[in-house]
Amino acid sequence: MAREASVERNTKETEIKLKLVLDGSGYSDIETGVGFFDHMLDGFARHGLFDLCVRVHGDLHVDDHHTIEDTGIVLGTAIKQAAGDKKGIRRYGSCILPMDESLVLCAVDLSGRPYFAWDAQFTGEKVGNMSAEMVKEFFYAISYTSGMNLHIKVLSGGNNHHVAEAMFKSFAKALDQAVSYDPRITDVLSTKGSLE
Image (cartoon, rainbow, N blue to C red; front, top):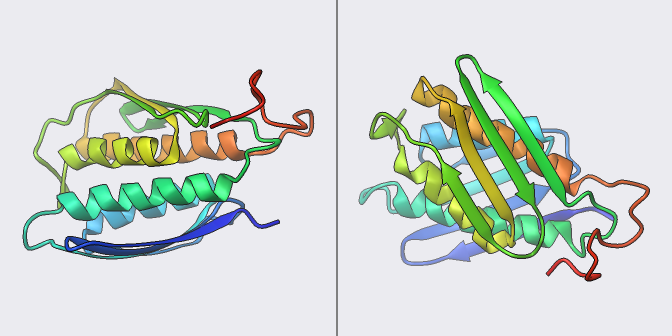
């Protein structure tokens, strides 16, 4: 059974269509109107081996806030839907990923309970044409709409582009690990018998 989800969300600020396939090949087709954000989402798909198609029409004449935050909301919703009942999956995933001089830790728990921990900062207001502060807002939105415990910590900083890219790639690797199957897990990995 394919683990995938298609989500559409329309507001006065954004119109978003997104399709996610968890058991993909790393294919992406992304247009958000924010070039650096497209680059980050492409890295997420490629390094997590997810298939991701995204179309966003947002109020970029205001700024990039709604476009990026709302994409996080929709991606989080898609992750939750695609993961389904979570039977047989590892639930936890983590990755410490180097990107040249930068080193980022990401850990996830698909517990069904949202929590977001962030220990990072950028040295400039922009990364490419994307507001640096929106990196945090994007991951916050994912954690809360997917019901995911998500920790991101910069262990060693440096170039802002490298830091952001390490965040997206480490998140991809951690999530891929968390949604992967373990044949020893026959139900959900929880003493409660539920991951909600």
